[in-house]
Length: 329
Image 1 (spheres, rainbow, N blue to C red):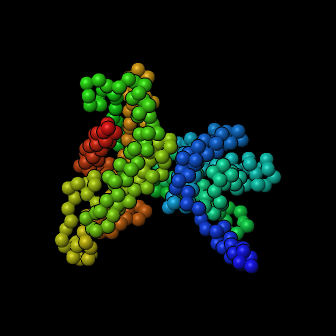
Image 2 (image 1 turned 45 degrees about the vertical axis):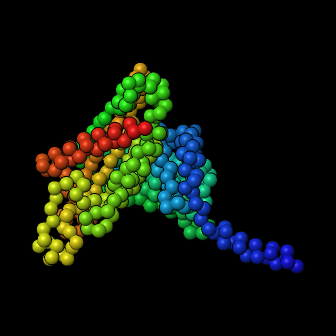
Image 3 (image 1 turned 120 degrees about the vertical axis):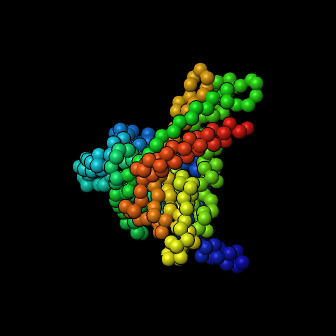
């Protein structure tokens, strides 16, 4: 009889366990490998020349986000490519939608429940246009198809590029390691995995107004791309706050808000020396200081000579710090 009641108790718990979301954080290495398998499937379907897997990232422990990108010079081209792919797919399948198939294959290759998966499609964020295009495929309601959403994003940052070269000769000691040993120690995957926590510590910190800045990594595979917002006195280190503004606006500080977008690329190592280069494209914007801007309220630092010089100095110092960190034992 006791075993019978235990069995009934387990049956009652079963729906709860099925509805609970899995913690996906520990599965990140598997997702990295699954991204390669997903790309092979895209290539086999003839979609590979247009769609590339940028990254597969775990968000908030329970959500897997897969990012697909286009080899397009601007958002209009990316949108046109996507519309053509959808039309061709619907014609070949008799009406099925491409986003449904892509989403189904995400759950298949990455082995996650649909409710814990998201699929984002984005253009390459290149070119001078102020808006970029993004599409999202998210789970629908119970027993319904995934929902397709698309929108334009503000991505018209003006940027500056900075470079640093790192070689075995930069390491302390009289006898540098061989090129092969240095390449093994400083391959792309290792460099990015070391930089991510360092960047998180550097940029996620308390601000003068009592709040915190926030960092968000948007690509950690092809490049190390991240965005930082809610910054104060980061690039504009000499910014000042007017006491009159603080009194009138009842603000803790009227220092301007800043936000950064950084893309770090790893250049292929030199086969002879084992040395490699990192390039960082840094874009920065700032607001008025009274409130956090929305939409078009941001201004490019690169538009003003004095602030453009500040960004140049900031980027050069960042690369020096980055190199010093990577060379630590």
